[in-house]
Image 1 (tube, helix red, strand yellow):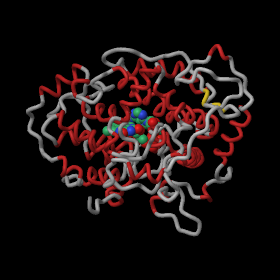
Image 2 (cartoon, helix red, strand yellow; image 1 turned 30 degrees about the horizontal axis):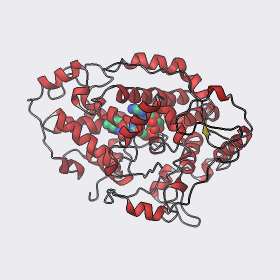
Image 3 (tube, helix red, strand yellow; image 1 turned 90 degrees about the vertical axis):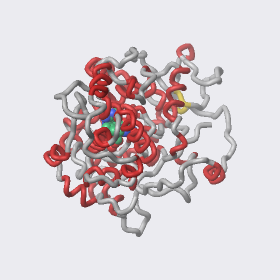
Image 4 (tube, protein in one colour; image 1 turned 180 degrees about the horizontal axis):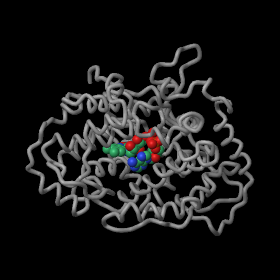
Length: 430
Ligand SMILES: Cc1cc2nc3c(=O)[nH]c(=O)nc-3n(C[C@H](O)[C@H](O)[C@H](O)COP(=O)(O)OP(=O)(O)OC[C@H]3O[C@@H](n4cnc5c(N)ncnc54)[C@H](O)[C@@H]3O)c2cc1C
């Protein structure tokens, strides 16, 4: 049985578990996600009592966070709310009678007898296009490959459910199961996200209807609501990246350039991180970085640090930098820091701690403890990119960073209204 909850620091082995599964079954990590989509529904995870609604309950005014993350009804002009859920339901019904060629089946479970008319998750695989190597090939190589084969992967039918069940499952006492879990309960549950496939589809729908058109131009502005917010559902396999890509391509045509910008993040960047963690055994360590990056960090290991903070000071957002504190507060209070700020946040940890090794370990600890999408290849590579230059090139040499790309407060003020963000996420008490 596969269990999944939104947050828990004791689940630090989760991404490795997923990768191990991939190794055994010899499938690409992103395709494995689509296999899990059905297993991880909200119904199988949390009791209704525990679940928080994505939108405000009837008659109640939505909170500020809900207003920010969930589109208001008036904003949806052309399609009635729930259209995507309906569309997917209809598609599944249409595919029920689908015939398949038994000879071409590949089994990923112990069940090897599948009769015509059985129920289960049937999914399609394309050729394996992984790029191998101890150190990751350049992002340029992978980007080229991914774009080349993108349509093959996106167009494959996803999860077809066949009729008449071949097994019945016993009812599960989820309240009891939840109580039995040894998880970090000191980290609060955010209100804006409803776990499960239904919640993920609702968020995808709101992205297509409201935010997608802003994605291309506003995705680096932490004050604008332009991102998909889908990473938690993708990370837990509630929603497959393939489903998201397919739907955004089909339903988001009016959003123009935003569609390809989004696919670049969702598919190309994600494939890069999966590939890196799949092949590099040191994916969460400075030794996993390229030679040039390790060398430059070593050369600057003894450089004077302008500020030195402990892990606790950082965790409690007690630095001299209001923007950094605000980003940290956003992550702790909402379970999701804006993507642009994650880079700034991790790079400052490098600047303010005694060594790159310590910086990476603190960044990963905080990321995996507080981000809903943490413990994911994207997180390992995000931190490795920021601190150890993974998938990046050398830049002008400077103290502490060496040739690792640098980011500073002033640069952020040129990109967005920093003061506005600081006011909104001024840490109360962490
Ligand atoms: C220091 C640091 C830590 C990060 N930690 C995580 C993490 O723990 N989990 C996580 O999923 N992502 C992580 N990222 C990558 C990225 O910031 C998040 O995927 C993104 O902010 C999630 O929000 P979204 O779904 O609204 O993003 P959108 O911008 O709407 O992107 C859609 C999807 O594309 C993928 N994506 C976007 N940016 C990246 C990227 N840079 N690399 C790989 N895939 C990407 C994700 O699957 C994301 O859900 C990290 C980045 C950095 C720099």
